[in-house]
Image (cartoon, rainbow, N blue to C red; front, side, top):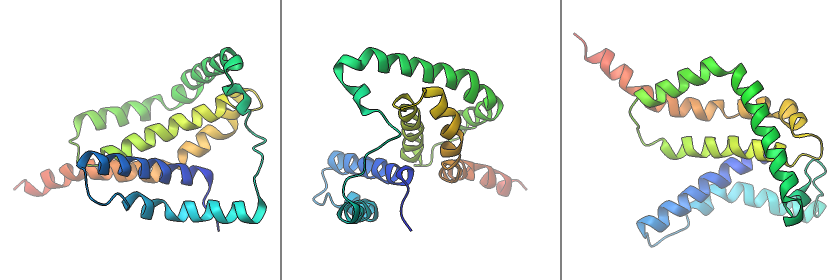
Length: 173
């Protein structure tokens, strides 16, 4: 069993948050991120040793070259238009409920996880902008499926924020 790219990204983003937290708190030990990310790092090292470098055929990383920047920005426009017209429009009601719940509920320390989920969703959009096919194809073939995998982590955030509901219900006579 291996860790999918999306899972590795999730772990890397959380590890990055831990590094930032440890730097801000000026702790003596800056190793907690390493233990958190160790499974993904070991897997990447083992896979690299066993099969060597793997060419990414799904992504055109040459779009990141300075001379191709206008083309990549145009692809980003396509991504944003598609997200607004298709993905967000299809999920408008649940998204409005989610935003309303997050605005009205109190934070309980789950903020970093919410930020990681938002950044990871943005990374999925960025991946579509780098697709060797049209950006819309990348979004239509994978965006909903990959963002759906973030729902369990989002449920943790919502559960942490919903704790006030159970306390309020239990405190009523």
